[in-house]
Length: 329
Image 1 (tube, one colour):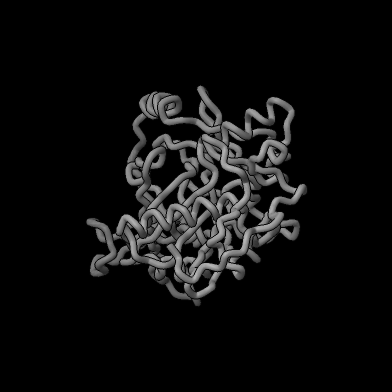
Image 2: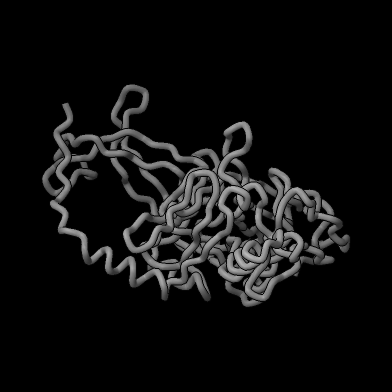
C-alpha cells in the first residue's frame, strides 16, 4: 500500500471520443481507487500521453500485490497499453508505455512496439504498423500477450559492428527478460522482454582474429543500425534508444512489475461487443477508439489453438543453409 496516497476519486476519465474495454470478468473502465494521488490523477484519461483508467488500476494492483508478497521492493512500476496507435497525427511515435514512480511523483509515457505476428498458410495473424489487432501467448507467434509480468535479469550482447563517426564501432544491446504468470507464464520460453528498438542489419563480415568479438573463424559481422522506434517487434516490448537506458537502469538488479493491457478476456469482450453492434464504451469496456475503427475487432489466439499451427509450419520448412556473409570490401 502507499502511505502518502491522496483520497481523491477519479472523475469522468472516460470521454466519449475513445472506446473502452475490460478483462475476462469485465472491470469497469475507470480507476476510482481512493488511493490514487491527485498528481497522478492528472495523467489519467484517454488522451495522448495519458494512461487509461483500467490500465492504471490493474498496474497499481499488480504492483501492490507483489510488494505485499515481498517479491519486489522497487517503488516504481511499469505499464503498457497495446490498444493505442503507434503514431500520432504528426507521424511521431506516441506514448503507450508508462513508467510510474509514485514516491517521486513521476509519470512518463514513452513509445513502445508491439508484436508483428505472422502470415502463414493455415492462419494469418499479422499486425499492421499503426494498430495491433492480433494478440497471442503462443511461442513463435511474434505477438504481444497482455497480462502481469515481472522484470528479471538484464543481458547485454554484441550485435555486430556499425559505422559511427566514420569508424567501425561495436554495437551492444541490452535485453531485460520478463517473467509472467497465468496466461503469460511462458514469457521466458518465448524470450519475451524489453530492449531498445534498434538492431544491426548485417551486410558483410571482416576479418579480425585477435578481436575477442570475432567468431571461431576470426570474422566479425558488419552492418547498418536500424531504428524501429514505435514500430512492430517480435513480441517484445521495445523502447527508443533515448528512453531505454533509463528504463533498464530502473529495473536492473531491482525487479518490478509490468502490466500489459489488454488481456485475453478484454480482447474477447470487445470483439463480442463489436459483433453485437455495441461500442465498447457503452458496455463499460476499454479499447482505443482510433485503433478499433482501424482494426474492426481484435482477436486473441490462445496457445492451445495457435501453437500446433506454428509447430506444423516450422516442421514443413526446408533446412536452411548456414548463413555466410560476404567479405566486406
